[in-house]
Image 1 (cartoon, rainbow, N blue to C red):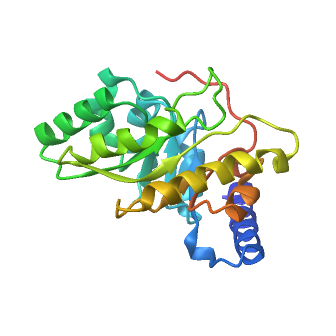
Image 2: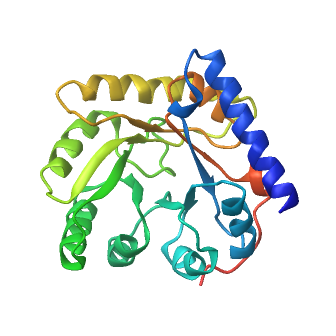
Length: 232
């Protein structure tokens, strides 16, 4: 298990320290271990070491690796989800963190109904930076999308997710995390259950926690650099 287990413990300790610095309890923040491109046997080591939430960017990678990893970890989808992958996504994932359009929500709801699945937790992805390369809706559109998704009987909107621009200095990401938290706080009025803020990755998750993150997505700090591997 070795290095992966040691790195997982180190990240969990850093989360706890960041929470104390922010006056928060450590159990307020959930760690999603990002497994993109890493082989199943390595991911299984993380699960054996205590990782209970895994994040995958590609449906086809999860379909291949999930049976090999085993265990009882919760699987989060954290990449851009194509509508034609909705059926597999419903079969494979416990949470979709990148909900960004009503068409996708309707298809996921339809696939849940066809599969006999009562509910699927989703987070709405917000493009707080306005970068064209980033998925997610604009902050101004988020409230309307949440209300439209809430009308779908099998989807449960649990909160918001974002990816800020990349910075060498994590402090530069702070305004983007703060912007998402402030947006969530405004939208939560009259919308019960809008509790989660998924923001922060290996390079900046401590700043994200200080700004209110309830979910952080960390891969490199646990597994090291990504493996170059086929997704098929």
